[in-house]
Length: 67
Image (cartoon, rainbow, N blue to C red; front, side, top):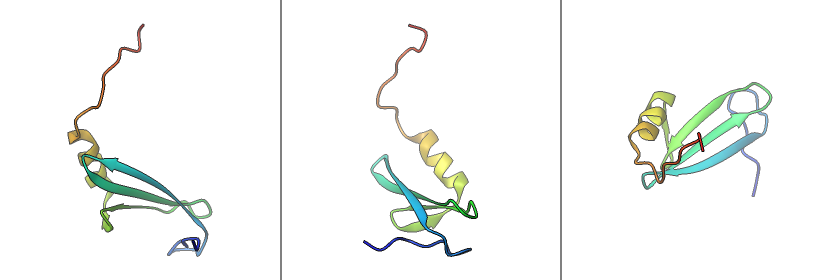
């Protein structure tokens, strides 16, 4: 698989994939210029949209960190 390239500087991108509430989210980050982009089901989205998705997704489990 070819390495994805940053649209700003041409550097290699690292991609982190998540599934949130049945939707695929991908965060791509360039280690050279620190550009980050988010995609949801293949479409570009803004960070505030990602935060809203994560905030509204039901939690899978809850545990106390005090124990």
